[in-house]
Image (tube, rainbow, N blue to C red):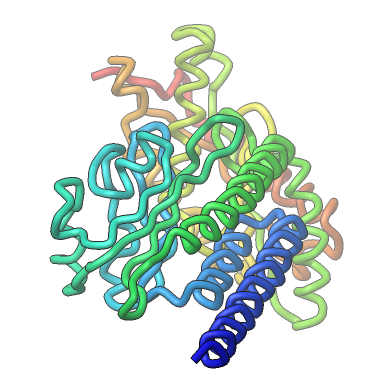
Length: 357
């Protein structure tokens, strides 16, 4: 009898030791993987993959906090009904995940039917039945970045040890997410124009060099559209620089709305903008420029400022390799064509093309 007990205890000790070793090894892998990347999507995918291998939940989710709206968004979801859940938002304080984000405390609930904090809406949307949950906050520098939530595991349910393991993963993840966000912010500051949120001139030259080499390799066309707002200085003088800035912002949004998803818009400087169009012939670039010109004329700008302004723009195009053989000349040709257009139009215009309604 004593021998059987000893054998059973030895077996349990072996299993516990093996499981502990597996947990430590996996956590070490998680730490190395997360600290080796500054790409947010890659970080999130690493986390979800390791959680699945380590804790084997039926479903698991990572929700990130949208600070402006004070909401949690299902960023990554794995398991049954995941496609229906992704993108759903919860108010901070709503449901188990919302409570954890608000209180910044980990939570293990063996039976959600007995907990009034449980939010049934997500189950109804996904046609899934939640029985048990463990949920932990992602905390970095005393700020909650989101939560990790695990749902249903085996017949025994979640244990306190699982909560400890998940909390450790969350600590690694929060640091990695914060680093990735800082990195992306710094990258944005060097590549994105802070007024229009289009790409800046520095980024254009790097991308254009790459795209010209690519066009050479695949023997394809590459086109530019150069845009200059007419009489922008007069608009600034008449309505003030704040309204001028607002006009540039609205113009940037209009450009993004008109161009294709594969096209890239840049603020070249001041009131000048440039659109990079890969695999686009001269004919198609001219057609795109005409569409843009019509949209500009139709648009009523500065409505929120109660100015209701119509503006015009001079537009020029250039195509590689037909018009130029390198990036500098391609920009120059587009610029020259834009000024030719401006000269033709302004010779016919005797007054500022602005009118209020």
